[in-house]
Image 1 (cartoon, rainbow, N blue to C red):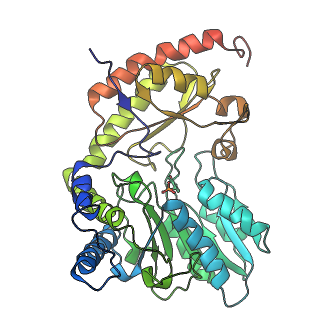
Image 2: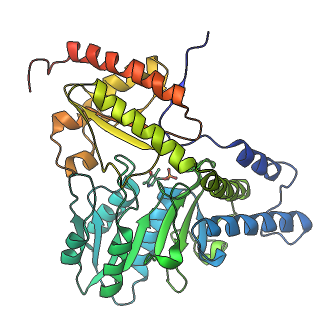
Length: 390
Ligand SMILES: *Cc1c(COP(=O)(O)O)cnc(C)c1O
């Protein structure tokens, strides 16, 4: 019998849904037109792009005109941050972000910091949340942009973007949020949110990799990062990734259907069972991130006295795909900046494990993980250099 395979890394990427793939296929083959061509092949592709733009816009309550398709979530973050910084007419040079951002935001701010901008990095609380009072203190008259993620990819905590955005409005600063983890998973309604720009990525919501979108509220000017044929309202040149865009549109429609079907409640109940099961079965383990203000599919824990990478590999042998919070760079293990910003010490942060569920995750999968995970931890602890130590 094939051993069970349980993929619990949906925050890293999701499988392309069958209906998404089906929608995409004709745009590789039967409908090969360039949406910028005037003939019938071009017009077929143009109509498909328009329809997809409508579907992606509807997902967040936006106008189609306010959606710019980009190469991926990282490209959307870069466009929002650099594009708005460079477009500022008042010559303002102060920008604000948080200590727990994805590298696509964090490293873009670091780059701005080396190129004439002054960057303030907001701290977070022990759940990884950006508190409005910290932003309030950091905002200045010369603050041009604030970027704080909607929900964190490592610990699942959802930020109070409504309050954060309102503070930016008061002080005349633009507000961008990276919603890659939330779009398609929890409701977002931009007409009701004080958000000027919002990043999405198809492959985190059952769409294909390599297609992103940036919502840009009408009237906001961005300097393009890619010049050329003037596609995407002149903001992002290059022949449209027609199949990818169609896939993104189909994924947005699927997200609306999953919402109606109650997928959010189903997956969060399984996630709670998983987290309660882990902390109940494994001594010296605890949940990281907020327990309730949290992405419905997202689980993350720290298991003390072990090292995440070793655990990840043993889980992989058991057919379970998870991720650890540390990235192995040149042989040295540097714990995640997110966990350190939340106040965890290095040794504890090394024991972080992220388990992110999806629409394919079943109760049997969770039972299987709860059966396999504790003995793996026990084995690793027996072998651990920390054994008997802290
Ligand atoms: C995955 C992710 C990104 C990057 O999106 P890509 O499409 O992979 O470039 C950005 N921000 C967050 C929060 C993410 O989880």
